[in-house]
Amino acid sequence: FAYVMHNYGTKVTMVEFMPRMLPREDVDVSTELEKQYKKMGVKVMTGTKVEKIEELPDKVRVTVTTPDGKQEVLEAEEVLQSIGFRPRTKGYGLENIKGLNVSEKGGAIEIDERMATNIPGVWAIGDVTGKLMLAHVAEAMAMICCENIAGVETITLDYAMLPRATYCQPQVASFGYTEAEAKEKGYDITVYSFPFQANAKAHGLGENIGFIKLISDKRYGEILGAHLIGPDVTELLPELTLAHYAELTAEEIGRNVHAHPTLSEVLKEAAHGILGHSINMA
Image 1 (cartoon, rainbow, N blue to C red):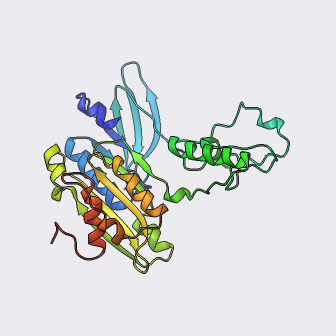
Image 2: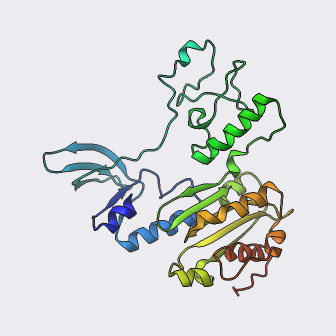
Image 3: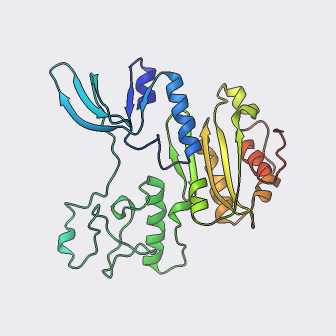
């Protein structure tokens, strides 16, 4: 919304309580996105707490506390509050299902890997479970749930490895662990970033900002995560998530011939970079 309203000529200020934009994304992606928003003229205030919002006859007044502890008053015609999601489980009659496990924090319906609750015959999918709250994740959960109900062979979901897409501008896309998360989990990793500035298709589109950051396990070459910011990067995720699902390595991704010129070539270049010999970067 900030990007859209800014392009309509509106002066936009973003107030983020967390230390950086898109705090769940890799820090390099968050840093690049904030840089691009500031460059386009959007005021970004991270690590800032909203203390109160006052609706006046002709404007809205927002009092915030900045990271250094100082209070600041912002005034605007409108305020859009975007403070995240939580499971909506009230009003469905769940109280009539005796013994159903619902988490005290957030009210999510608790399920196992089959999408089954603790009550036989009661299943749940999607946002009400408090898992990764995205439409495509709910769809995948629904398929697994139905297959389990039907008693046919199915799979389980690793929610950390499912694709995430943020339709800001530039777009942000990711799956798997961030660099920090991979290190916290004890992996010995190799990390390589390849810029869209070195991609011919990006230059042709006139959108050559951003990069792909690929993270792999140094021992086996397994792809542990990928983090992208740039033109249409949400369209590049399927190759990466399929590679992870099929247990392909960075070498196998790099060996896959990518058409030229395409944005997907950054995947090949990053995979080669993981191996120490990117083609179009010194």
